[in-house]
Image 1 (spheres, rainbow, N blue to C red):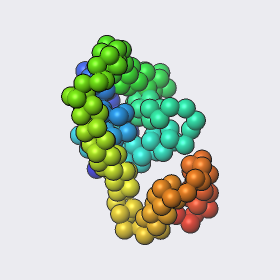
Image 2: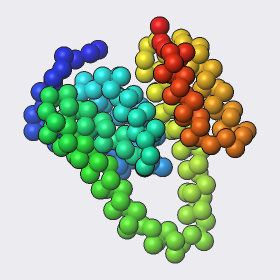
Image 3: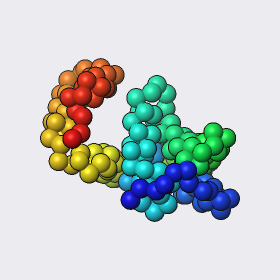
Image 4: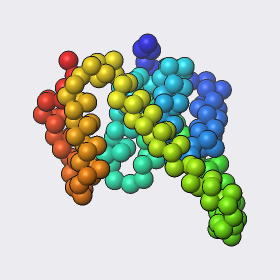
Length: 197
């Protein structure tokens, strides 16, 4: 469902955006990328503040850019604000989302890191760390699936799935730098080879 833009954001809407990213910060195990399906559900399906294309573009642009992979959160906030028709709101939206996603998790890490380090010999601490591996992998797969199927045509577009499979095998079995794979994907997309029908 698409929404006519620009959208109207009340003060309560900005607070809800901030509150939601505070929540994401607390529940994001291994980083915000694992929450992509949840973020999409909130921003695109529930609130209609972003389109599917804006949501996906926020993630793709941030992942292609140098720097931390959390930049996509700022781009989502930026796009929400930009959809109101104001650059000032875009700056505020990006700032709200970044503060929301960074503040709680940073405080938790600051408070607990010393304790975990001092108690790393405990079976419970080691078991917790070991048990989180499969959960994180499953959440990353769900995030990838959400991005791959966000566009209704993408689910039926075999060249995209072929490139995904080839890239997965190359990352797994070779030492080709990921930057080269990202560049190759960009070239394939820009050349029109991977253009959706």
